[in-house]
Length: 112
Image (cartoon, rainbow, N blue to C red; front, side, top):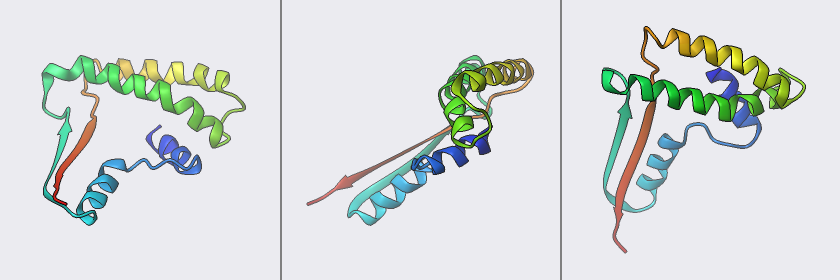
């Protein structure tokens, strides 16, 4: 599913690697005191349930349009039916495993 979403985002003119791009733009844009942080669910048992719901929500938001854009299905209704099965399998898998998710944050100070 990850590859499907990335391929579709590129095909739709979206950029799936935003955290790295934001960091590079801030570095090139004259900012100082740049701080980059990546937050991950890895090793944080207290977020297992929330992480599973968050990743499932992201999948429901992005995967149907991605599947249509890549020609894997004819329409979003078909994609949603297939995705329901995939999300169910994902949620079942996450009963015994952590849904890994990472969020990147970059901040910097601009001195003009």
